[in-house]
Image: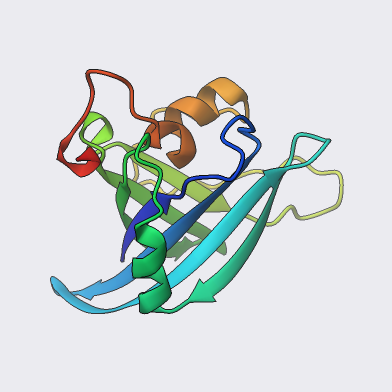
Amino acid sequence: FRVEKVYLRTTSPDDPTKYAFIRKRTTIVDGKELGSVYGITTVQNNDNGNDIEAKRIISRREYLSSFHGRDHSRHIIEQQRISFLFNKQSFTIHIYEEPAHVKDLCILHAQAEVPHEGDQLEVDIPPFLDVKRRLETNNEEEQKYGAFGISLIHPGKETASTL
């Protein structure tokens, strides 16, 4: 499926701990678009440094209306996503198509179950994938590889999607 993520202007631009985005998810089979679903997500960072997300399904009409309130200081994010199961684990590959400065960047998200409480999480990476390294959970990696950080327009790196 294909995902388009559009960040919205915030009511408090000086507070980077709160933001919202709309998302369009389009199912694609054999190169044909079969339909889209739409949603809005608001994100707020709590006192512990964790993001709290509130998601809501919206109509196409609300999506198009909200699109007019997009944050022009951010790129529109476009990704192709491939989801699959391997050894009782869920994987999603995020392949960036836009913005241009991250085109073809691939991020693998894995969800696995910890067998016993207190055990270390072990992810069994499928042998058909070439994973360069594990991303760390820190601000630097989030800014470099997370959609929110990637979306920020830096002078001199504008693409057609920012116009």
